[in-house]
Image 1 (cartoon, rainbow, N blue to C red):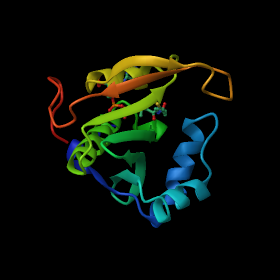
Image 2 (cartoon, rainbow, N blue to C red):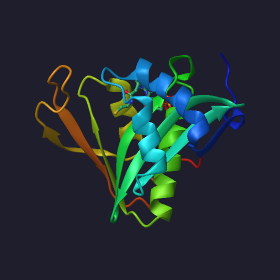
Image 3 (cartoon, rainbow, N blue to C red):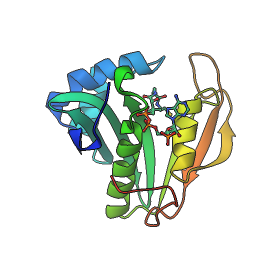
Length: 163
Ligand SMILES: CC(C)(COP(=O)(O)OP(=O)(O)OC[C@H]1O[C@@H](n2cnc3c(N)ncnc32)[C@H](O)[C@@H]1OP(=O)(O)O)[C@@H](O)C(=O)NCCC(=O)NCCS
């Protein structure tokens, strides 16, 4: 599939996106969040910021974070399998980084599985640095989590273009 970057729009997640988001979540993670968790995030969590990537009206990816003082904590990022490796994950991350900076965050963090090469490559390419491990963090297989941080959110990383 050929995808034009202009074809994809990144907007704030709303209630009408949740069904499709939960479907992508289900095929992307071993212990997926249920639909109700996304509903809670959108309606009740005042720290939460969630965005979706749309191809027309179709949700093809999403990502979210919690804003905690001057830090943004990524909760999840995923792209529909057929739409991977087309730049959508990067667009979502850049949008989240820009939103976090505009809300006053100066650093961003996330956890990633050592076995998740594509995600680690994506985060490295955006200036995230591996800073530590949470032992046995993932309950499905007891895998450790690598903790990554991106400092100075207001500064662009050399490879980083605008969304
Ligand atoms: C991780 C994920 C969100 C990346 O989304 P994507 O839209 O495929 O990523 P992009 O096309 O924007 O790729 C951006 C960069 O990520 C890296 N990357 C993406 N897919 C990759 C792959 N299969 N192998 C190696 N690197 C990869 C590359 O550095 C790439 O940059 P490049 O195109 O200049 O080489 C996607 O693979 C996904 O949804 N995975 C399942 C859910 C998940 O693991 N989420 C992250 C949890 S921490």
